Length: 541
Image 1 (cartoon, helix red, strand yellow):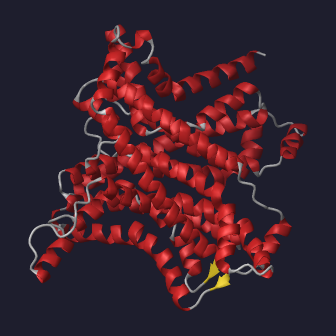
Image 2: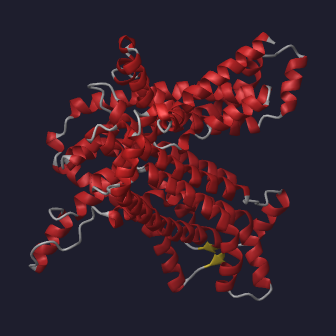
């Protein structure tokens, strides 16, 4: 009994640490969270001034991104799943490559190439004799939607492709035998099957859109995330930042509910008979204009989301090759790797403990803790920053000698804490998927042979979980290296990372120097994408 109480105490403390940002934001609305009626007055003032702009800009951005990711993601998924054409196998995995591109890196690349002084407009003015701007300014809501669409469409593509591959091919074959033309088979069979998957993918893409800071800040558009940083850093108003963060958190919670509901509706046939039926139903071969259309549908997202941004970044990189800060680059890379490895090891260790506790004793408390820990990835980095700094301010005001602000902002403690709040969920998902492949009968057999407690984890589970643990470590490592909002605020002095430096250099219009850390982030981001592509190819084999 004492051991069980100790385990419950550990789980409660872990939950409190991971949920502190959300609890602190909710606490800011309590009567004691702000002096007097200050919180209400600030909220009313924002409602009269900046809040309508934040709501309108965020709404239009989300609407444009929704239309974009559905159009690009669903059409490309249908092309590689329902049809057969030369290059189909290549596009199946290549369409995932934009996942390796941080959205803010794509924004830097397009801005450098399309701006007034960029190579495209300069060339057009030279050959046509035109004066002034040839293309409209890309730094606006429509430009941000363009960037986010081609950076985030793989969420819809991946889920829709899985949905269509599981059932659509053999049901479309049945519809063909019943005499339905191709357009009707797509409209009445394939699209309804993919609808829940598309809804789940759109919810994920919109959560990333709401959490984005790099694109919104660089393009100068007034979204909630940009407003949170402006309220905290420029206006020095923590209550306004907390209230904006709470509104953003409510929007994310709504999307999370939508994503969860959509996943519950995913009922794909996974039996051997269904897979054999799907294999026997061959995709429709394409020729002529239909073949060209399929190449365009699959090639355009790949070109706009990966190939073009990489090429655009190489141009300023090569132009400023002799002036690149290679010595400082090694320091930025070392900081990124150090934080990434430390956070990945801690996140995977916590995920292992949580997954093992859930497997050993799945009581109500353990299930609740694991569920709450799994929600962290949906919380935007800006919300985590405000939620961590608010209680630090309260503690520092109450006990000035505690030096709480020093430990959270002047060391790596606060930054790693923010990473764990957000990325333990990533590690937990991978570890739980590994545990799902370990039958419970192995635990019973091990206990009969004398292995229990952590001996069971070390001798039985660990050898079977190694691949899942490695995958979880890689995923968290890459996510930490690409994380911008939390790192930008919580990093210690003189501890810049690749993401922070890329943002600062691009903001100063030093895109040649920004290209070096940006391409390094892309290279690191390719690792999990290639692993995911390999897994999908092996599953389809």
